[in-house]
Image (cartoon, rainbow, N blue to C red; front, side):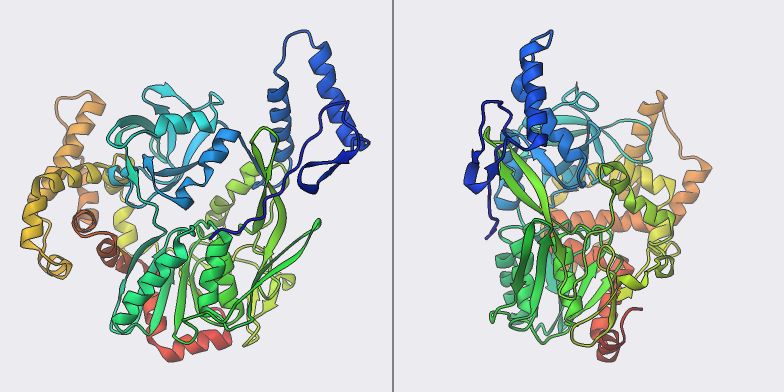
Length: 558
């Protein structure tokens, strides 16, 4: 269960207020020059300004403006937004299945919820939603609550959105049928081999620990001794969910995380005696999109030399947001402290107050500096060096968790080459043709496939994506290109034919993966998807080799 201490504060903007007791123990001192300055300005505008003003709206804008001068994670939510903010971490709801943020009046898709309608039709994280049902929502200062009201709706209803996708110059149209949104945080779990289990957690929610325990019980029944825990692309969530999970791996009394701030004393969380996986080999997969609660868990495991962290440096979101309710039902999510790993490392990466845009571009800077392909491009100062608490290995602070074994984005492997060809990007990424094709294919052949391939193992070995399927999908692509160019027909160019030779195998494989997802589920989808990635394969190699595993825990980073 989520355990957050709520406190209240009242921003006194009335000149008639006197020094006294604020809400829930906060003292509002109207003799403070800053408060008197704000309240005087508001009173002057309210009483003397040439036109009628909305006093509450002015106060709201003042709060928003103040928060923008602070760190990138201190935010303001209206009363309506407060009601809806935690839905995706607490229970099911009906809608299109995305998480979004608004930056400079543009709605960005932060996450596409696994199993939701947006994922099934090909919406992607990073997409910018420009129109909803032909209503422009970008650049018009629309409230998040108004956007939510347009996107949400009863199951079975349809919403049309136009999105702008990175690298593609034109708006893309998507027709999304709203549905019940599954709120699962554990997207897959299965046995890789006779001794090694795999669990993927894509967010830390109220149900995460229970989902984890159920998955672990099933894996143990199948003989699991070692575990690969995949936190790649896990942007965080409930603090207590990550603490409960860390508790499973650490010895009784081990510090998991502590928080501290200028106005907040040190709070600590330690492992209890309930941990149930303290001896088997453990590898945790992370990347640049692993943040917050993911970093708390992986940092604790690394500091106590309990497991090997594999992947790339994590995002670096290590701030505590405390919800401060305001009198009208709105809240401030105010940063009050930093998260620190047991060795004393701050998880939070550097930032400049009031410069959210540069902060949000930090991952792009990592790419420019070569960090995604070479660990040597990361320069650690002596002040960022810390030592683990059991084996005294050197680990690094200064923002995010640096893995024990670095796996670059391999720009030379077949998977990377195939998926970066312009034709593949057009079919899979920009236009989502492959999703449209597979959706139609499943609608027409679901019963046949289920009869012919009653088990995933049979499907995995016997099902073949035919040339006809590929050509049918290409026909959809060519038809859409012809319509886009306002031509009767469209023929693949020589460059596209060359791209097809490079990416054909991946197009066929993607079709097979998406069919497996719709027929069997996400466990089966990931069993096909994961082996394409170097981090996953390296994790298996490390966890299967006791000598290499122990060497990493004793000698440190590679």
